[in-house]
Length: 251
Image (cartoon, rainbow, N blue to C red; front, side):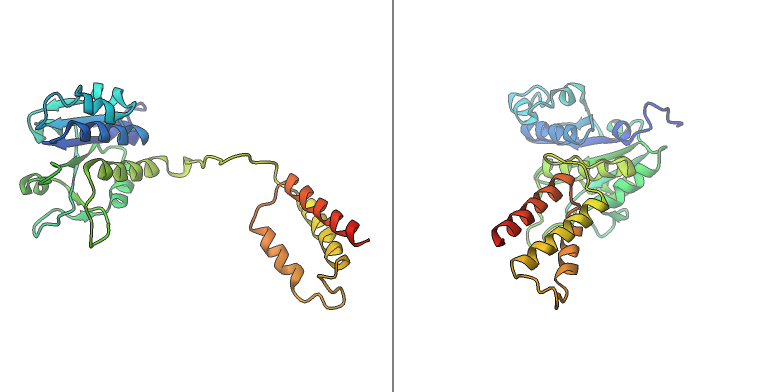
């Protein structure tokens, strides 16, 4: 299969498959987990709940991810759910004596993000009994989510969220940008910062905190401290204002 420019993204290629899900609310929660990370291809295999895509609980738990529910399909077998896929990963907290290679979510996400010709699927089992051994054995890999050995129980949507998150990070790769938190001002220039250091040193001498004849390592330590903050112009101005007030009250 040769991917086109429109479907080469992992966001378009990755499919989530839920096998014999018991609660409609869990279907809605998985839809929400998928949409928050940018995925939308959802297939249900023989769900054990009635009308899981339109059930009131599913709609409520989807919390705005109704489009994922509306686009989801219900099929009668895993084989049908995997049509068009060429790489399948079973998700399970229970390791088998005989199973495909065991990967972490990060192993999986890095592999499928790097291979544009893969049409991968993540298969998650029933809330109570998980996936049958025959389904696991038929997959390329088994994904085990690292968790507290004393309590490794993740519910269905939590597992889906972890997987979707890792896949999003891998899909974005070097293009990932970090959203700014709050206001971010203009970075101070080196000249502005050096001027602030000189001013601060004068103020510290003026109030007797720094001995000009025996400065030791106070200023280098302060410079090291401020170097970690990525000072902005306005912050430099504030510090110089503080230094000015220190000098004024000393005079």
